[in-house]
Amino acid sequence: MQGAIVAFKLEEKSGKLQLTPAWMSRDMDHAEPPVVANGIVFAYGSGEDTTQAYPDRGLDDSSPLRIAASRHATLYALDGETGKELYSSGDQIASFAHWGGLSVANGRVYLGTFDSVLYSFGLPAR
Image (cartoon, rainbow, N blue to C red; front, side):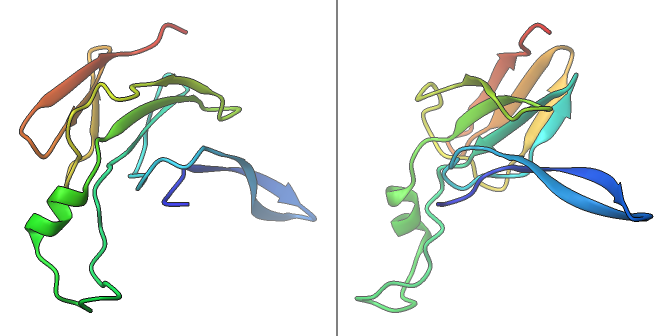
């Protein structure tokens, strides 16, 4: 696995608060921090190849090598209570996301990618 989103419930047990796992998403290919809007968890897999050590060349690494080995980012919308996948952008996003993050405003979710494209997706109706 290369990264997933995990949700926890805050519960009281024997007078003490504890976090209890609620659900875990699918593998998101380098999952990045999610945002929550209207009970929907928006998350994305960056698709970036983060390998920095190699069996054949050790730590001899460079950005061009990682860029060439990266895949496309994928945006997901998940039900906040159950983790059920409501939406996946599939292969609509052409590049990987690097040092970015999701933004939510005016009923839209935004994600910028390495190739300088800003993607905008409408929020699912609830």
